Image (cartoon, rainbow, N blue to C red; front, side):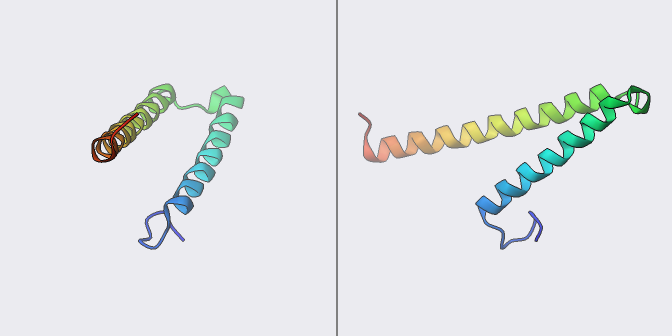
Length: 78
């Protein structure tokens, strides 16, 4: 099953993302253990990945806050 399959649930997708993140973290740790194996632009590459995740987090926050606002306007807030 792939995270790109239409039949995958949100929970399954979250598990897949976490599992892949763990694998990627281990891969980076192995690369850092031998600095001679690091590509010259590796820090830039990691920064680009980090920025991509921050963009995703911003989008999630925007959507989540939008949903909370819609809920509050529909049902009122205390």
